[in-house]
Length: 127
Image 1: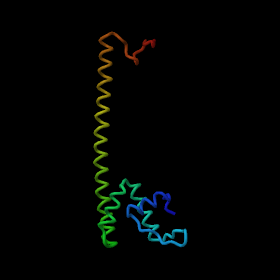
Image 2: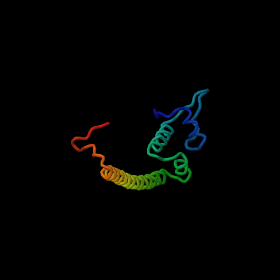
Image 3: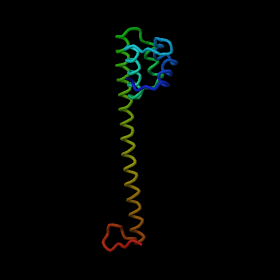
Image 4: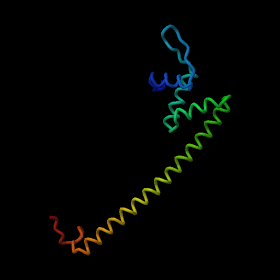
């Protein structure tokens, strides 16, 4: 139902992210609220949240309204952080492309100064 492994569910319990389920003999009984909470944890992990961040939300929230307001705030903050990382990566990609272009141009100039024909020139013979 949640695609969470038994090991993951036990970890969520140990970290206090979920309450222990009811038991009938050797079986654990997960009610809809607990299954929903596990699904929410899984979704949070897929969105890039760490378990410690999810635990922080659970520890600071008193009501359902507070919970959803806190989750909304954390989502906005996470999205802003991702956008900043994307901007940094785009700047890095541009810098790398420029460095690559400069290195290729410099190599062509060296080859030209040494009398080595460019690969795209007619009459170029590969060794």
